Length: 458
Image 1: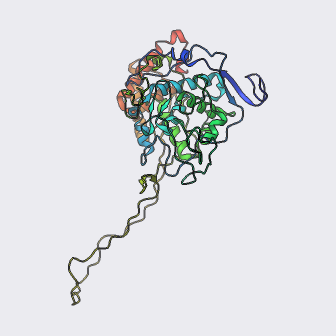
Image 2: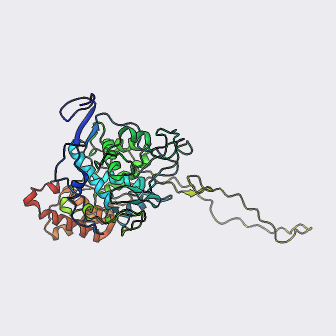
């Protein structure tokens, strides 16, 4: 074994090691075709891990950012001018392509064995994929069933214009630019960071940042590097902030991850953005049933992401298009309009008219609006947190409704996690979303005799 690396039982340079099974074997666990039903969930890695192609997790946190902030842009996957609340409320309509869903799920399952103390949920990896590239569909790209984004996603040129200045580090091999770096792939890794810690996530012998299997696994390794536990608010915030040094980015990613954990997602076909039928416009193969999402009884336990203290959500600034077609955060300035008289001025001065004092009161300067408050409600089973912008009254209504509906199906004493999922579903998708969450719970309850209750998390 190379010096500076270790397995789980000793050493100093690397945290833990878990080998990957070939992707073809992993994919065989997927048996249920994707639908528009939020009950379709991710796969469990029930076949164990093989001895080849290990995934290693650095013992020290990776400080080099995976991507860097660009002025006026939260991420490629977020439209200019789109507010965080709009992004979160539209998650169930946006959908996660099958190939991306498989990659996110596998990242969680592998990391659960490579570094179980990290507590990485697939929903966090998926949230980063949503912000960075809309799950590989940004800019008309298509996500193939083999996980490769086609023709390929490139971020803006990092030449110091509205972002960090990073001169070329890969000779243009990954980003096609021999002068400056560009972030590459569905998870938007800067070439220098990718070359430092990129992972061959699907075992094909190639570390390709445009392959979502490789990119998602690399994101998981990046977030778990160091000694953090992502179920803790402070560690979670620190890990995502290392990935992209923007608190606005962190706020949105964690909000999306929480919504995904509450069931605000659907599986859709591979293909381009907005193409839920998975029509492939780039010549690849789509619709392979071997990699569709499986039934919800195989749902991996997603960590209930906490609300971290001391950090207030930052609203996304309204974007305007500059003259070069690029978004800018500066409002468009218009020169004052000079009104020309319609008739030439008279040589005689006008007769002055008596003026009347204005009746309106001068405008009152309003104090800046307070940041949105996240409502919290203490229940008999623990604290329930509302969605961003919801009031305590709305949260109470959602909680009461969920307790009533759960009682109807004999779940008279729900756990905090069950109640939180139901409340989040009600606030993001209404009563239909609640019905689906309850169906999920009933499906899981039917398995308790076999699985010992592990799927419900106590």
